[in-house]
Amino acid sequence: MARIASTRLSRLLTGWASEGAGPLPRRLADALRELAARGDVPAGTVLPSQRELALVLAVSRSTVTSAYGLLEAEGWLESVRGSGSRLRASGALDRYVAEGRLVSFDARTGTGTAGIADLSSGALPGLGAVGEAVGALTSGDLGGLLVADGYHPYGIPALREGIAAYYRAAGVPTEAGQILVTAGSQQAVWLVAQALVEPGDTVVVEDPTCSWPTATTRTASRRCGRASPRTTGRPAFDARTGTGTAGIADLSSGALPGLGAVGEAVGALTSGDLGGLLVADGYHPYGIPALREGIAAYYRAAGVPTEAGQILVTAGSQQAVWLVAQALVEPGDTVVVEDPTYRGALEALRARGARLVPVGTDGGDGGDGSGAAAVRRLSAHGRPRLVYLQPTVHNPTGRTLDDAARREWRRVLGDLELFTVEDTACAELALGEGEKDGSGSGGQGDGGGAPEPLVAGLPMASTVTVGTLSKLFWGGLRVGWVRSSPQVVARLAKIKTSVDLSCSVMDQLVAVRLLDRLPEARARRRAELRTQRDTAEALLRSGAPHWEWTRPAGGAALWVRVPGADTETLAQLARRRGVSVVPGSAFSPVDGFRDRLRLPYAHGTAALEAALPTLLECAERAAAG
Image 1 (cartoon, rainbow, N blue to C red):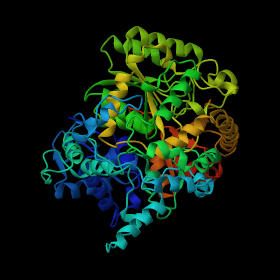
Image 2: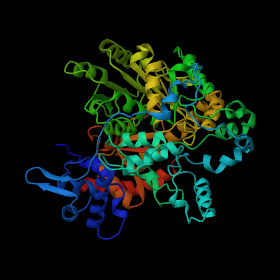
Image 3: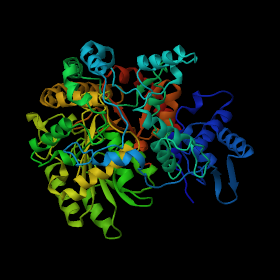
Image 4: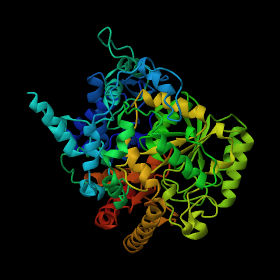
């Protein structure tokens, strides 16, 4: 019988006390019911005890008792003597099935033609107006957007309002708050199926109808993870509707503001850059050829032989990790992850039904020793399906493996022939301070070269490398990638086309130009982040001298230990005081590190300085229990 840890449930419930109406028990009951209705908590999951949940939410036990009682009366909760209280929900899990016109995309590798006369797609070539609109863009069009991190989960306000006006012109009253921007109608239908269709539900469709919505709906009926604002555990994104501010001091994201190079690259685009692309339908499921070749050249420059056919372009590294989980992990598979690790990977692997086995991180950042040695011991009792690692600029700790640790990992992974996923999303944010940043072992050092992947010495058929330009240049540039064997790339691309048919061609054209500016961007970020890190450390040494951390070799945040405090409770209390912060357990597969906080300095330290008195007070309250 599955149980959900109180720490994980706490993250899914973030913001519940300030949302909705009525007394606290009613709000908590409504939030728990939403988790059940959306399928975020699978059917039969046992909830934490009333005492345990009350402790982590920083409320009285009577509040939780009343909330459970309301849910039971409404049929959303079942109490079984000796077994606890189980939420009623549902779900399923299976592979994506591509059919209809999606199958015709399999041959579109972008590296050549398949010798097939393609009459399978009715998509149209581009209008000249698209090229004219691109040519009219200037760097000024991005000016107000580049000062922020570029993440707009609902869409940029101007576009949402423009779409709403489109409906109003058709006589349909519509406000911007009713619009969600998606990566095309394919993704929109996929989201609807994920959110609204339960296994076994009856869905009425026309006969005949478009093949890909049918395939998407069939697939959704077999899966357990469905999209929801609460599934990510990233509360700061929930408030980003683009229609106003939530009044929250946001310390939950370490994403960086945009570099001016992005605006310059956009302004330099002309209608001619699209000329050869507009004569076709614009769907490039593997990515446009110029970008795939550019990314392959990036790896060759790092001493890793790579061809364009080994590259799949994705909408950022988050989608890349999600695709890997979908393609390579079966429900119940054992996946080895570092503890702590990137929370986006934890979400993707948990949604896939993986059995997560933690190993300590190397480098003295809260881990428990050599992860490679632990993997060797674990493999003696059962072979993991894959190992997920961040050896260069680890998220959240900011550490980079030294030469000895990298050699040990290569030796163990090679000896055991384990499939390895190396996430290098943050590798370009190395601070380049000699041996501490791993400059002799794949980090960049002060020379500004491309980081060499740890898996470079391992067989290509059993490795995946995830990368992105979004971390270095701007989050609003949704360009990431997977490097692997052509066979794995083809498998991932097939899944990707069932969610979105192609990444934005405009983003990819900008990315091609930005690849040439990597040395300049690295130097700019390195200087900024060093200064911001040093200022943040000075602030904490002065204002919170009893807090502890290890100086990061890269990244945009400090991994801070708050002695004696439960940071889950601290985060809940801080949220009510207008400060959004992420507790350490959000990065742990076993809800560990409950004395840790990730504190970003990406946007300077003004927000941290303003929030620190609140965090200190909340830490005191959390420590007092």
